[in-house]
Image (cartoon, rainbow, N blue to C red; front, side, top):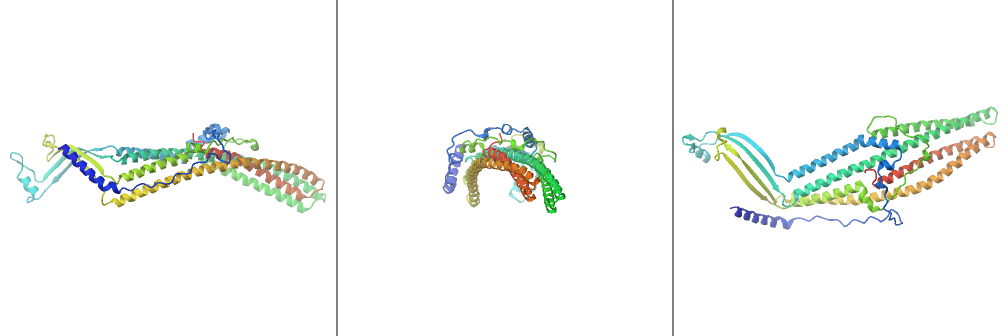
Length: 479
């Protein structure tokens, strides 16, 4: 009997495959991606030393900055949200894994049935005795206690591919967390250096206010001696007021940057501990770009896109398996009787069943085709996103490396400009005291010097941030 059933299932399986297999659509594929260039510039760079391999605690030398990063990695809300996404992805693996196993349960139930006397069932019950002299009850109670199980046999690896896709997406969420960590560290470093730059600019403005106030007192004395006019006094007074206004603008920016850092650290406003030493003496961290191909291993967003692509490919395989017949096996065993005291009467109360269903889609194939097409489109999206992520990573590193080089050249020239203007301030003040130049030249010299000093500090800040950005773009910070 078993051999006959297996033979029948074999015939049914063959018929199902004949109906569905020849019409199963193939997945679309895209052309191969362009290879990553061998270097970030025109020259061939075969140096494999890469700054991304350095841990962030070793990359940043400022202990105050490192302490801020430590706090952020514990308290940052966005990072904590990402960690919950990892938990969600982990649970999805458990769901997919559970679908591979049989589902089993226990069912207990009670009911009552009253059928018509003049029906086949009613007539049969009326003429049937449970025991000699004991007729079948009317209405007929029904008590059942049984265990049951169902299992979808994963013939075409549909469920296994779905589980593998869930695993890849779980790993992708981990890489997504690493990417958030990398950006978080870079953002804190940017804001920290911005804060140091504002402190330095505030000191420059205060020094300029003092210098301008001294010049104002001189022009007032000269006016009393009829060597200057009221116009000169008012011009110097206006310049002092402008600088004092700039001082409060910088103080506001300092407060905004402190609050931004506190937000990243997940805490309410408080003063940011920092070093107030000479800002212009800070040196940007030395960076080694390594080879572009190392981006594929170091950048979390590239690895995340790669895992998303792998998961999308598995989704296509799982969607394609929907065209094939599915084999479901169900079984049950228990006891059933119309009276509770009979439930333990064996074998009369024993019930069991075992069934296998082989089902192939015939009519609802349009819905399956639509889902397969969507899965295939998502696969192509993941592929394009992977290519875009690699291209974006390469261009980001190339841009930052060029920026570092140009900022250094600009900083050297700006330093020379500031030195020349500092000398010109002393010269203009001496000439003004001896009435050899008018107040306008003194004002313009002081104004140019102030602007040049503020720009020099901005350039230094850009240098420090550019080094941080290269570290981030190379994939450093998350290890």
